[in-house]
Length: 588
Image (cartoon, rainbow, N blue to C red; front, side):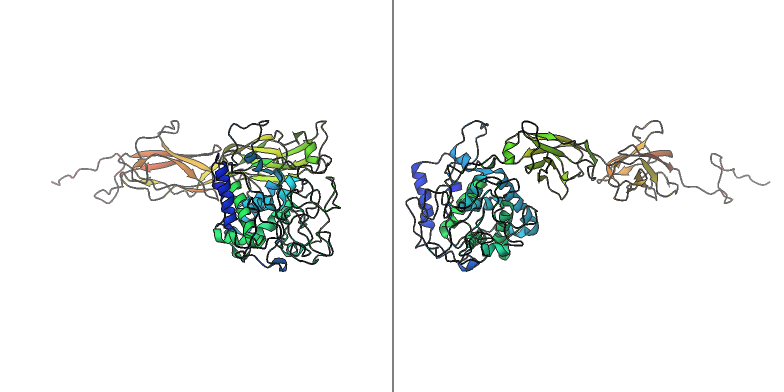
């Protein structure tokens, strides 16, 4: 049984509770899995016997080759920040551990959204990707990634040369891991090259499948976990998916602990400021797990080795590095483009107004600038739709992340108005920074019609107490085109000059059969047509008026006549209206 640290309530971090939690993790491991005094898997421990659910990736029983991973466990304190927390307030251990670097967090959530569309039955939670990313690479070494999500230097595990680890000879000629003798796990999600070759994905839409890119790696990990028709909402199937990533019960327990912890609550922190783990299952507690290769460049401009085109596949997570960097003292680097941004400026965004169901003619555009007003390129900007609205960006999403161009400008996708009218906000923020954003007011107006005409010209007549044989049918247009889904109101008015509702004459019936002389919530169909319910007449005779109005000002008045049925005179000729029939006279 997996240990469930996330269920420990806030404030339960007593020594007794902590000991019980660690004991639960140790007890949950299968026989033969050696652990240290903290319940962590010891160096060289063999995979547990009950982890047979793992796949046969790489020929070693798991995607990772059962290589080392970070064994740090979540803090016992709840990750939910205090409501009174403000910027500048000291952050507790629990809150710090719950922080996920902005770009890395965005990658996990984008992968979940993609899988929700392509494999809805998998039910992949982004928190599972975050848990694996924490265990595999400390969230890409605390979020040391550029605007496109690529790590500043490669994250490489140790050589899988059989010396304390699995034996996997080179399968990629060093294209992904720079090693032509043995394979090494690569990137934020620690894929071995042979797995990445078939499981890799392009998560950021740049046309490449790069295991060193957190968007690509997160999406690949999601697809890898969702293989074989798995439904991750079923605990047994989730366990099997995690074990296929790294065939170890201790690994499973660690990932599940972080999964439950992140489900309790997380928050975004700037890129490069995430907390780093300090213990590895490889037995070297002085390092932070997977680190850069010895020859890896240390500047932000440095790029990892370019993977060969079309690669795919995920490698097992959690390989520890042969030459890791110290977690507390990362190599000094020049500021990233994101770190140089001082503020956002509007980039000539026009008025944001659209009719319901239509696309906004104007797109939101912003520019990232330094304090001196210089444009900054290659910075991720997130656009979010905020407020009570069903408007979306093109594609149906309520958020979109774009990278600024050479002029420092990022332009959001086109806005599409829904059916809900009123105002909402489009907010632009810099991913990875806690800078003030820019808010843009947007308005959705109701659909309109400027002309209403009656379909057909049959006179609408009825006898007192009867019902009209024909129903009123109308056509709404706007600037000559059919006006679909336009709101309309129909009222039986007193006169052409008095729009007050009449209290006698023709009427409609509601669902309970009661008399109604005003109908609201009417809507034209997609072709602008509107057919009113059947009309009835009371005992009052005369000519009456029905007035129909629409949003946009279109109005139409229709005449309704109520008169008794015509009667015949004795000679068969109808008597003139108002003239009494002649009386019978006797003949002398």
